[in-house]
Image (cartoon, rainbow, N blue to C red; front, side, top):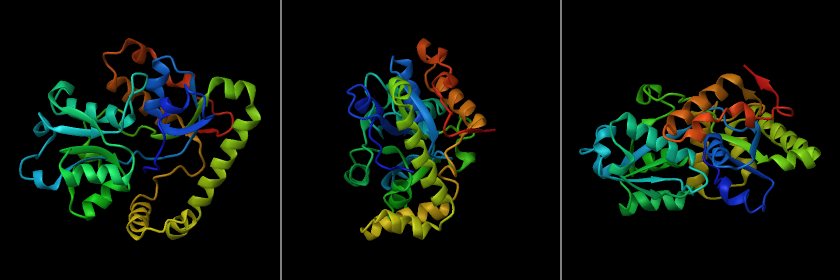
Length: 276
């Protein structure tokens, strides 16, 4: 689910953060473009992305191919890194026979205000977003779902669709120079995830201290609907890492550096551990 994650490429090159939570495919994009990013723990257990379309277009857009010529909102990418949202949008469009130059890509932001305003104003025809924003917009009859990673039948032709989305990442030198700091960070994450896994959704939302009623309702709904959204312990799954690499290679077929990238070379599971 979306947690207002800051862009990895905005944080690491400027050295103004030692750790970031971001999509692993986005981190792979940064690594393929010369970034020294390393990932140390899993946060999500299921990618909850949804390609949602403005409700007023329901009679006109029935399938991916109908998005040709439309405006698509994605999380903002940069020269150094392509966001997971944009990678997935491009893969889905391609699966429907739509090339990237047949649509107009615009930044959709990573918060409720920006994504909802794009749909309400009609500035975008569709958004590649994730939960809980997607279900909140659906409940308010602002959008309909065209493709949903939580519904396999809508994305059955996408390779690596069960990729690892959010993970904790850092720079190589942080691990080399201050391993105790990395250990502390991973331990805090694992304790948090283990606490979440043993408490009810209501308790998790209460702990966040969210005061806005609509936001609380959306978070609670998503936690109940997707009980496996978050990792239970921060461990990496070998199967999920393999899916992630397949997805990333599919999303970057025209990039030799990306095709040559082996995900295992940027995974350090010393502290979080590994499962099958």
